Amino acid sequence: MFEALITAAADGIILVDAEGHIRIFNPACARLFGYRPEEVTGKDVSILIPSPYRDAQNGRRLASRETLGRRKDGSTFPIYLSVGQGKAEGAEVSVCIVHDLTERGAAPLMDVSRLSAMAQMGSSMAHEINQPLAAVMNYVKAAQRTLETCHDARAAKAGELLAKAGEQIVRAGAIIRNRRDFIARGQPSRREEALYKIIEKAVARALTGPGAGTAKVTLTLDRKLPPVLVDKMQIQQVIIHLIRNALEAMQSMPEPRLSIECSSPQAGFAEVTISDSGPGLSEAEIGRLFQPFVTTKERGMGLGLTISKSIINAHGGRLWATPNPGAGVSFHFQLPLIEKTEQ
Image (cartoon, rainbow, N blue to C red):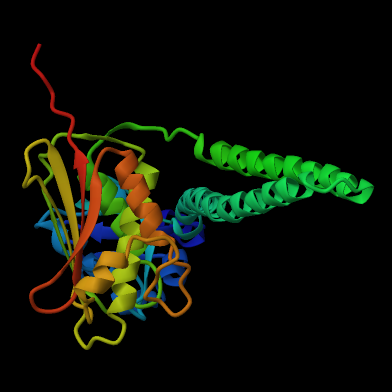
């Protein structure tokens, strides 16, 4: 009866023994991971979890958490493991229910990304459009001054038309400023968060998709740092963007390596470093990276890093890049820590 229920379940279900070996792998799991049950039965459950999440186990068995799943073809996808303990035939077992987060996890971050892009583009466009509008207004005023010396009826009519044109220019500028302010007015929802948890979830989502499965990823996170006051969706967006940039830069490298570290080298601040082994960038290229519409990608818009920098700045931190001594680039950002004071 128990096995029949597992077989019919819509969610992926894995039964794991005390040694971490897979005992039951239901059809829903077979569809999710691409393995036939006989291919994984008896093998360590860690084959379904990619590095660095597999390496982060540190000898402990599966626990309920958001992580990555690794398919048979090496591709990865975000999952939530719901783990319960029990007994089967007198032996201790773990029952793992696998929830695919591919669609549910991406939607909120895509919304944040689109809104941030709209805000950045709105601000940039307002700045760019206001300059020619100001120039047109100057030409209109110059034409009005020229016509003031003429005493022809047609000149007077032209002056009236120019005055109306000037009014519309002023109106256009006000509309642009209003739309820019409306987009930028939204206040992020900030809460005390453990930064290492934000990083782990962001990495899980960033490592989903093409090119992610080939990179060797290492995570070095200080889990004892004080919390940070942040909008976690925005900080996740920054981390995901930086990781995906790194993965894209390393696509042609024979041994791509990605390192994500979190520590506190400066008192009062947490620092996150995302380092790749890609072809690297020159000092001149690094100096222009955070300018709007500047990109090293063939089809890039040049807004991702600008948006990321504005998010970090809005949180009281800073974002910068440095070339690696050997190969690749490191992106760093700092966020203020919340230091708890004893009452």
